Each structure stands twice: as structure tokens, then as C-alpha cells.
Length: 455
Ligand SMILES: Cc1cc2nc3c(=O)[nH]c(=O)nc-3n(C[C@H](O)[C@H](O)[C@H](O)COP(=O)(O)OP(=O)(O)OC[C@H]3O[C@@H](n4cnc5c(N)ncnc54)[C@H](O)[C@@H]3O)c2cc1C
Image 1 (spheres, rainbow, N blue to C red):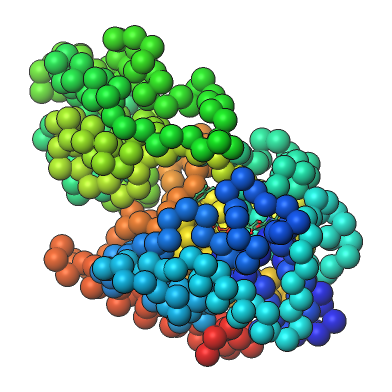
Image 2 (spheres, protein in one colour):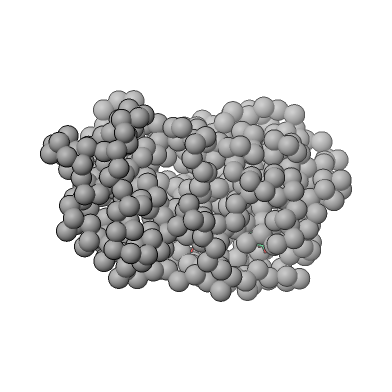
């Protein structure tokens, strides 16, 4: 790598630390800008890098869970975050749970040990200034990017290209939907059989509405002023507007006829394809602040979803992310400003490990650019590639018509198996396939002369 290349990594969180370490390992001169302790977001408290702002769990470590597979891949990729987590681990059953202060201290120490990597405590507010001062910039300022920088980024992406809230509906696995209690159709016969319609009787509807109203909700945090768009209201807000508000709104049966009864159902919860393989469906217009347990309870009240397996829960919270499929190239650089790479939650991934993994990927893409080599995209059969397909917008059919929303690591992101795999064997096969393909990809990185931080 040309040692004269200077890179600014902005944001010393999970993604920023990973990106900085990959770039530094590959010979770049890296300046990591972190605004703490000069300025703290409303959720950050610890001046160290890599602060976990909420839960101290990095989720499952089991090899038969996508979250566990992701951790195994990150180990292969020399992840500093997984290394720091293992060094600060607490007993947590099957999850990788950490002492958050020790975790942040361990990560900070690892970063400070890199020669040629300088940590500067400074709130970046002007990306143009960064681009003028450095050859490349990696932006990883996370969901609570400071206001001044978010406004500056919106100037680059255009207001419509940057979002400040998630309003997410649950996603369920296709295998868990009872299709004998549902029918496929589009409203008014327009659009083929694209939707799966889960009918509810009048009694079932009223029971569901009451359950939604009574459900425990996740309270907004002080910095999450409830600013909902009328077109994207949480279902509990609609439910509170009147007895029939849901039936005339998101659960409307308009333009649908149940082929079993030959009649229009009382109301319908629609499911929409979430991936091209057809292995996951999202609930249409069912964004909610209900707690996870309450979401499970509510879904069980819909006959076709009685045994639904929720792959991703609904949520509504403050977030900062770009419309990645529209704004980013396949190497995570901004289309309008190719010297600027994005990483972490800003790209529309969600979760601690997902953000860190995105940082590794952005670091590798930036290092490859500096080196002047092309590297292949990560394999979609591995967690890293599956998540990246989401960021590129490759997964969702008809994506252009649908707003881009953040995604965590879940089974619905993987391509289907080519061969027949018994259900009980599927997690093991998926794990083997992911790690095998990841190792091959890593060999291709080595072939291109790239190095990984820990090895
Ligand atoms: C309130 C909240 C709670 C969450 N809880 C969880 C959870 O429990 N589990 C989970 O898996 N995920 C959770 N997430 C989602 C996400 O996984 C984490 O936010 C994760 O830390 C994101 O990683 P990141 O590297 O993208 O950003 P961060 O880890 O937030 O890192 C961004 C860094 O950039 C710095 N920064 C911001 N603006 C500037 C600036 N202008 N100049 C310089 N530095 C700047 C910040 O101080 C911060 O250190 C939560 C998100 C939020 C908002």
C-alpha cells in the first residue's frame, strides 16, 4: 500500500474501530476522530471507544444461530470487537455477554496499540474539511451522529437520502406461516399473487386490537421525541384512534376475496415477500413499539400466524442511516463522493456485531481502493455477504417502491440451499457453508495483498 495515503475514520464506535484497525494493518496512516469526551450523545456516557449504549449482550454465540455464525466469521476476519468481547466476557449462557466498561477499555487499548493510528478527540462537523485534508474518509458515526454532522451529511446525500427514524414491521419465516389459513392475492387483482393475506374474523379483529392497546410498549428515550409520519404510524397509535381504525387502515380487506369462503374477509393482515428466495415475509404496515414478548402474543392471535417464527421484531427508534441502495456503491463508498466510505449503522445494518462487521468490510473495501486492487464481493452464503446484499438492496423484490429500512442478521437474509437439506440439519449446513465460503473469500483478499488485523 502507498504509505503516503492518509485516511480519516470518523466515529470511534464499533464500526469505526474495526475499519481503523483494518486500514492501519494495511499500512494506511489513520486518524480516528471521536467526539467523546468533547461531546457526548444523549446515550453515550463512557469516554472510551466502542461503547455499548444499551444491552451488554452481543447476542447468541451458538454456531447454529446466524448471530453465532457471524461471530465465527468475524473471528476469521481478525475482528477487534469480538476479541475485546471475549477478553471481557461474563457468564451469559449461550450469549456473548460482556462487562461493558472492560469491553470498551480493551477495545480502546487494542486501537491505541496500532502504530500509525492516532486517536483525536474532536467533533467532526464538516465532511468537506475531512475530504480536503485526507485522501479517504470512512464515516462511522452511528445512529446518534451529532446533529451538525448529520445536517452536513444530508447536504451530500440530499434530505431524502438520509433518515432519522426506523419504523420497522416484524419479519416472519415463510416456513412458519400456516398457508392453509391464508390466501395469496393482490388488492383488486392488481399485481398477481404477490401478497399473502391472513384473514381475521370480526371477533379475532377486536381481540387483536385490544391486545395491541393493552400491550406493554418500549418507552421512547428522552432524545427520541415521537415524530411519526402519518404514512408510517405505529399500529398501536392507529388502534387507539377508534374501534375500526385498524380495519379501515392497515388491516383493511378492500379489494380482497377469500377463495375459501368466496367473501370479503372482515379484515386482513397482509404479508409481503422480504427476499427473492421467498423464505421470509414482512408484515405490511405493522410497525410497532410493542415489546418483543407482546409482539409474539399479538401475532399468535392471527390464525395464519399462530406458530409464526419472528426473524426480526418490529421497532421504532431514533436512528441515522442513509438510503444505502440509492446512495452507496457496492464498495460502501458514497456514489456522489467516492472517496467517502460509510460503515456501521449509517449503512442500514442494525446490531452491535452487524455494525462491527460492516466496519471490517468498509475497511477492506477502502484498503483495496488505496492499494488499487479489486476484491470480490463477500459471498452471500456467509453472514457478511448476506448483510451486504441487504445494504445493496439486492434482496428485496420491487425494492424501489419500498422505503429502505435497517436490518439485523437473520436467517431470512441467506440464499436458499441449492440441494435438499433436512430441516434439522439446516443450521449446521448453513454454518459450514458460511465458514467455508468465508475462508475462500479471505484467501482472495490475501491474494490481493490485504491483511487482517488479528492473525
Ligand atoms: C439508544 C440505542 C440503543 C441501542 N441498543 C442496542 C443493543 O442493545 N444491542 C444492539 O445490538 N444494538 C443496539 N443499538 C444499535 C447499534 O447496534 C448500536 O448503536 C451500535 O453501537 C452501532 O455501531 P456504530 O459503530 O455504527 O455506531 P456507534 O457504536 O454509536 O459509534 C459511533 C461513534 O461516533 C461518535 N460520533 C458521533 N458523531 C460524531 C461526530 N460528529 N464526530 C466524531 N465522532 C462522532 C460517537 O460518539 C460514537 O462513539 C442501539 C442503538 C441506539 C441508538
